[in-house]
Image (cartoon, rainbow, N blue to C red):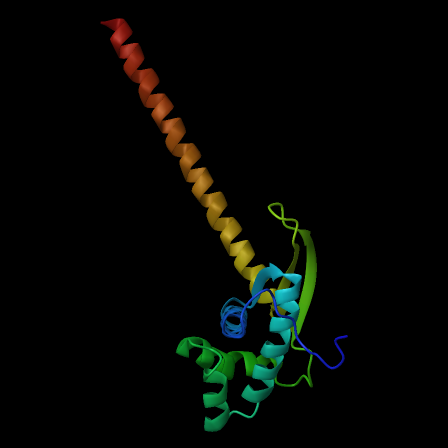
Length: 161
């Protein structure tokens, strides 16, 4: 029986599991939303919530404790400056796990792990990317039309000779 046994092993050794969770936490703070398996998302959620709670104290000691888990100095700075300022009023529940279905390759249950108050940031980035894609497609279409016009002009010039 598993009485009192907390946490998931995730099919890894202890050091590999800790490295995976640190990487997931860093990615969540960097991108505000990540897509991973449900088990990893649920485990990483605990670490992310604890790191945000430590960051709310905003002193040197808490910075050092958080920096043990986040290996990117820019992400640590962003956590203390931006994320805590936005989420600081909450008493907990800083993250959300949204199940998205099964992965095609191995049918693993997938989920999105995201920071709760950052939906607008992710949606804003998505609209910016969509606009860029549409502009690029429009430019490509215009270039293809210009090539077709040039080729038809060259063919008509050859036909006249």
